[in-house]
Structure formats: structure tokens, C-alpha cells
Length: 513
Image (cartoon, rainbow, N blue to C red; front, top):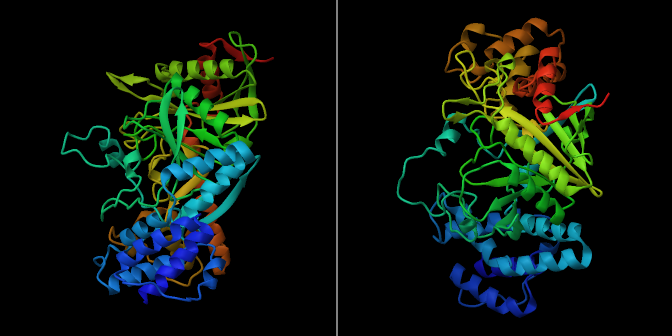
């Protein structure tokens, strides 16, 4: 690689896509020349092709190759180095905030978000090419539709490892304390902590607290954003959480926003730092209608209903923000201490809480819509990973906790499934031999799928690989539906629906006859 030529390409890219101002070109060029060990720039370089780039992949690869060839980083640290270079080219946090709020005022929130989201793609914080490789499809189940993805960029996490974050013993203070902390902005990273020189965030006030917004590098859906507390404090869903979420949609009415439940098993993968997840995507749950219309005696301006969804969801809607937020907050707090042993719901074991909720807020015109997903993380001898978690027979497809996004019907399945499902299809159609004894060997790559393969082998009547693959996908689809059914604290049978009505009656919420 010619370092001088690479500098000119990077400068041209930054001018075209990263808002590098003309007054800053000479300064930035000299920074790059020093970084690359070059004494002078290249004159008259043809960099016109740079202007046609949709993503910076080519430049990132060239930067990493140059760094290795010239011993600017150790092997294995190429990504840390290229992130640092992209950080140099990205506007400073203050400039990004100034541009965002100026655009919001002059052109509206959608224009401001488009600017911010595009910046995060163009500076390689969101690695769009990698995200686009994720597999995606839909499953229509009656009136509902599930969205299913196989994520190829994020490793699986174990529920027990996630829980350890909340009870971790005191150790030498880490900087930054976690992957969500504000202190990641500009952080150089390490082999165990991603570099973040290219991350940018937008400051925000939620219910009188300092927060900030960034986009997710994994981008599970359109404009997947994360709102994060400025303070490193644990997740704690309470009545004030709903107020914070309502404040968010007042600033970002184009986005939905929700909080994971704040307990292991039913919460997200990071419970030691308060944060919400949102974005421009309409989730499958949001397309579902009300199964049972209800009303609140205390808040007459609010529409209430039990949602026709797999897990247990209460929907609260009103143009009266104060009433919608107040009622939703009361439901959140009431659920924490509610037990219904007939439906296996126990609020506490000693001092250990089991009930938690995931509130999600949207703004639909002038109306605030709050969905409250009721969760319980109790375990039993039969279900050691969670009574209301994916049951053991489904763990070959999904063992991780079913957090906010999946509870709303967008499944994020582990990357290992891409290869495994293809291998299973080959066994079904006869391209590969079915060897039951081999599959029962715990060292076999398909061991976790042995029961699934046996069932499919017995029922599959097709001949081609395409037919086999369709049968495998159908199995995955129905498994995802069954997992959501597992997470329902009030099942859809008569006993469960009676229990659901009993809980809401505690708050003077009754069915509309």
C-alpha cells in the first residue's frame, strides 16, 4: 500500500461522506501523514472513485493492510487501528450534536436521524456490510407475523453469565466500566473491549436525568438505537421508567422505545447499566390488535386492553400523556408484588424478586401508546433455566434469555444456525447419511439438534434439498412461536385469561361489555 495515496483517499472520503470542512482538510491530512509515517503528501492523486463508495469497507481494509505492512499495529489489532483512523475523520461529538439539533429544528427529527444514522454507517461504526449478511425472513401465524433473523455478527450469551454481572465481586475498577458507558466515546479499545474512537452520541434529558442516544453497531432492525443513562447504574424498571420513555418519544416521535425487564433470564444481556432500545422499526407485536377491551375507573381518558399476542401484554393508549403514563406506571409497580399460584406466578422467594415488566412506548399521532409485557423469572426443578423462559426442548434453536426485542416478535437467533440448518437439510434429503448413533455423540456438531433431526426425519416426505430446507425453516418458525408461548405468564387458556383479568381488576381495570 502507498501511504500517501491512502491519505488522499481517506481525505476525499471524509470530505464527501463525513462532513470534513475545507478549513480542516490541511490539518487532518497532516495528522494522517504523521500516523502513516509519511513526510509529505501526494500531489494530483486521482481519488474520484472514492465518491462512489456506499460504505467504507475498501478504505478500512486498505488501512488495516497498510498498518500491518508498516508495523503500525500488531497482528490481530488491525480493527483497533482502522477504528482509530475513522475516529480522526469523524466530526467531534460537539459538532455532531450541534448538527443534529440544528437539523431537528430546521428540517425535522427524521432529517436529523437520517444525518446521524448515515454518519454512523459511513464512519464504519455500524458495519453495514456485515449486518446485511444476517439472514432474515417472516413467519405468518394466523393474524400475527413473526420476524426471524440469524445474526452472524454477535455471539450467544448464557443467562448465567448475564446474571453474574449483577452480583460480580468487587475488583479493580475497569475503565470504561461497561460497553454502554459514556466513557466509551473515543476509547482506544483492546483485544477484549471494542475500540470506540468512531462512536458518536446525542445528549438527551429524560425525566430530569442525563442520558444519551447512540445507534447499535449490530443493527437488528431499521435505525436500531440505544438510549443510555449517563450514570453507570443497574437496570431498574419502575413507574419513572415510563415517564423517561414518554420523554424520549417526545423528542423522537418517529421511533419506538422500550426497556428490557430488569431481572436475569427475562431481561437483556446487559443488566448492570440502565438503557433502553428503540428505533424506526414497527415490531410484530405493535401490529397485533386488542383481544380484550378494558377500561380504567381511575383514568377515564385511557383505553386499556389485553393484546392478542403470544406473551402477556397490556396496552395503554391515550392522547392524555399524564394519564397514560400514570396508569402504565401503576401497572408496572403492581405487577412486582403480584402472585397467582394457580398460574405458577410467585412474585418473590424471600428477598429475591421474580416479577418484572418491559414497557414499550410509541407515539401514534397525538396518542401515547404503552405496551407492558409482564415477565417472571422463577425457575423450578423441571425448568432450571426459567419456567417462563424457552423450555429445554427449544434450546437447540434459542437458549439465551428472551429479551425486549424478541418478546416483541423479532427473533435474533445465533449465527451457528446458518451452517447447522443447512447440514440438517442435507441429512433430510439424503445428501448426507442419517447416523443416529453419531448424532448422539456429544462431540458431534449437530448433537444439540439430535431430537429435532429425528422428528424431521420421521415426518419429512420430500426429496429435494429445497423441500428439506423449507421443512427445517418451518420447524424453526414454530419453535419461535412456542418459545413466545413459553414466556407468557398468563397462558391463553381459560385459566390464564381469568388470572390476567384478576390482576388487572386489582387496579380497577375491567372488561368493556
